[in-house]
Image 1 (cartoon, helix red, strand yellow):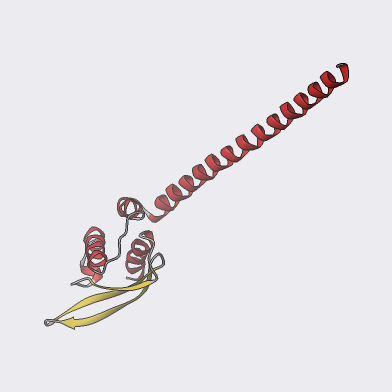
Image 2: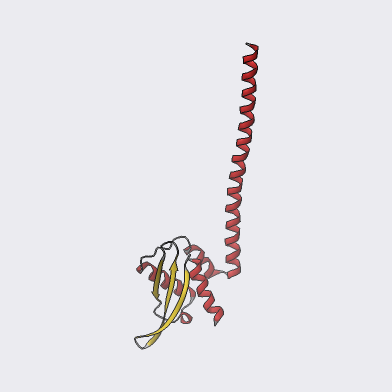
Length: 142
């Protein structure tokens, strides 16, 4: 049971939120889960009524209800949605691997850009020094 519930927490975190806690309350004669999450981008604590117990929802339904509740609370989630759906269709390990590979590719691209700028600066400095020495040679010959 704990592993299943940690899967739901993982989906919340995949959206860029932090799950604070989940309350189980009676509503209309049945039990429902109410999730509290923290959105670091807006510094808001959001309360989402899932309308059912998490265990009774499959992960797609959970994610859909969570996104609907967040939208009703005024929290816009854009960046993590694709990653959260990736988590639904793969294991956590594969999803983390994809995230790490994406981060590595981004780091490689940024590193290549920095290296390219460094090479351009070195070559530019060399050209500058050569132009300065040519100019000095022309002044001495005149």
